[in-house]
Amino acid sequence: MNNPHKIIHIITGLDVGGAEQMLKRLLLSDPDSKNKVLIISLSGMGAIGVYLELAGYQVQALDFRRLSSLSTNFRALVRLIKANKPAMVQTWMYHADFFGGLAARMAGCRNVVWGIRNTFVPLNSRKTYWLMRLCAMLSYVVPKKIICVAEAAKKKHVSYGYHAKKMLVIPNGFDFTCFDAQRVDNKRIRQEFGIGASDFVVGCVGRLHLDKGQDIFITAVALLEKIHNQRMHFMLVGRGCDHKNAELMHQIDSFGLTSSFILLGERHDIPECLAAMDVFCMPSRTEGFPNGLGEAMSMGLPCVATHVGDAKVLTGDTAVLVAADDAMALAVGLTKMICMHPEERKRLGIRAATRVREQFSIDKARDRFYELYREITELSY
Image (cartoon, rainbow, N blue to C red; front, side):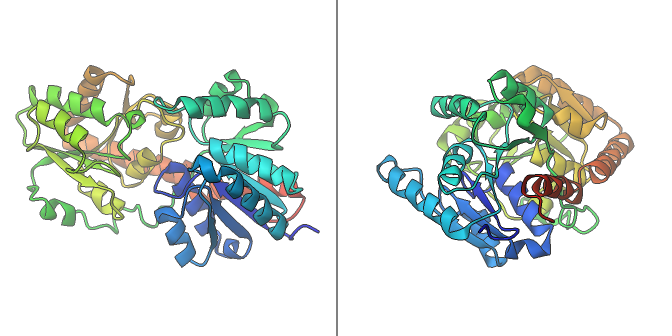
């Protein structure tokens, strides 16, 4: 007999990332969820896993990263699912969709829901591309439903061959408890790094990766430096965005921008980092439904972003959107924002905060998830 209301979430990993943060927000939005769920990571605990475990959630970590132990870990995954007899298994991202979906079916659970979290396959991963193509074929037999994070992601994956009628879109939802400009110290980070009160800060948040476009941002900044005399700082926040990264430092040094950049690396005080910025920039080459952009909007920051994934759906007319993978276009967009009157920038940020709070709250997203759970399991959530 299935375990009443029990849901197993299987996710590729639990390091800090968009899908991982969304799972965390979804779980924490329902205080009763810790009694209903098991979270299984396929690549170790990660920072999110540790956080959820400390919050009282049951988290299991396997290691699918090593080919030599793949079969052992897969059998362990099947046993975990069998032992818990869940009402439903929900998977997050391609590797979890593939391994988690197959393991769930082998364990006798037919209520499987996949999760597509990006529009395009990562640019530097052929293995992930072929795994995605395999998932496209399996989408006709393994999952009952496929949750896409964005309309753009749904359309793209239908073109890859995914079962169109099983797909539905549930955008990310945001928790405004932490991302509230009225509650966050907007001076601490600036004081910590010697940023003057009248200095102008443009910042990005995201792990260092080709998809996230930090290289495009740095090139755009080099163009900006030639046309603006205002004292400006450019802040990079995220895993890999630190002085230990030789490749990143080489690009910054090659443009003579070392003194202009502030590299914070991975941080656990993202609201404070955002509060130190005057403008937020998202230079991504690809996104699904961009978390970092939504969090910046929540803080009332005026935003410049590339027109990727569902960035337009998220921002509406409250941001400056530019073509992706184009440093000149990004520089022009940043120039437009920097040259805007401060009051106009402030009004734009207020409108952005209002939009994201009214349309993309975690409560609205949770209600959509729970509606699907009821449909799949015929149980109340």
